Each structure stands twice: as structure tokens, then as C-alpha cells.
Image (tube, rainbow, N blue to C red; front, side, top):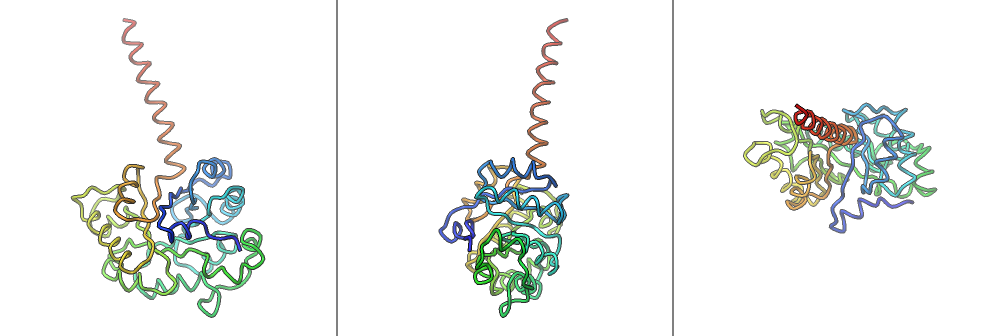
Length: 263
């Protein structure tokens, strides 16, 4: 079976640089897949992508050595199993608040006897290989998002769930959970920043991977220095909008200067 490259990278102590796909387009996905990311996550929660978009995006990513992941929109077994069957190599599951929810998530990703994933990896066999069934339980990444008030009170019981590979922090929902305005790159004097570091320490203690969504490369590098294994920076949509805005702002600023010198 095709090895999960980024899972091995994290085991080896290397940092994974993850890209984020929110646009339901194979063209933008292809552009992103050729930029050198270690992995790309298809956002099926807050992005504009559904299953019919996700499948061709997975096919597009598979023309490169980038590892394909997906964030599902809820801890729902049918959706988790279907995107794994499509050839996704890891799931980021939102709003995991306690041990029971963590166990249900992990078991949906695993074939019996360790889970209850139904067998039928139609495209998974093509992407992963003919011996997919023998190794899928170990190769698929299972990452739970820590972002609710309840989860902050139950970190160890969630993180000690058998089969859970790691946790992922969504700073926006985490900020809401502690009564702050949602956003990325939380300042050091905020409650959210304190919780980010506390979550990280519990992940280290439980010997699982830790990931976080970031708004800038500078903040992502800071999080790697703190000990995060897996960092996401922005998204395809944000990269396009910020790049375009920078061009427009520079052009309009230059034109205004030229016009002011003509009078």
C-alpha cells in the first residue's frame, strides 16, 4: 500500500506544511498541488466543496506526491467513510468534545475488529494499492479538532483515545469557546493563546501529533518552534484574494502618486 508520507514525516520529527483547499475547482487545486505543500486538506466544512467536487480534486492531487486529507463537516460516519473510500489519506474531524465522540470518529476510520468502517474503497484501492485493506487502519490519519468548551475540560480523555493520531486547533472556534473574538494568530495576551499552549502540552504528554491553523507563515513558524508537528497557513481562497489585493493596492497607490504630480 502507498505509505502515508506525512504520517511518517511526523513520526520522524519533521514538520508538515499543510495547504487548505476551499474552492471547488480542480484548476485551483492543481495549482496548489504544484507549489510544494507536504499535504493538502480539502475543507468540506467551511469551504465550498462537497463530495462531487472533492472526488475530482483528489484525482488532481494524486498526480503529485502531495498527501490528500479532508476536513469533514461533522463527526458523521457515512461522510467519513465515503471520503476515505474516495482515496483521502486522513480525516480532520471538527467539534470533538469528549472521549465518546473521539472513539466514534476513530472507529469510523477503521475496519473491524478495531472499528466499524464498511469495506468498499472504490478509489482507495486505485490510489492506495491492492493491499489497501491490510494497511488502511494504520496509514489513515485520524485527527480530532479541539475547539469547544467541553473539549478543553476533557483534553486527556480525548487525546488518550486508542487509534487517535493527533489533534488540530481551529483558533477561531477556540476563541469563541473562551469568550473571545474569533480569528487566527492569537496574541500572547489572550485566553485563546494560553489554551493553544495548554492543548499542545497535553498532546505532547499523550504522545500524539498536534496541528494548528495559522493566518501567516510567521505565526506558523512560531508554532513549529513551540512544538507543533502540522501547520496550515491560510487557504487557496485567501492566497488568491490577498495576492490580488496586494497587486491592486500597489497599482492604485502608484497611479494616485502619478496623478498628484501632474497638477
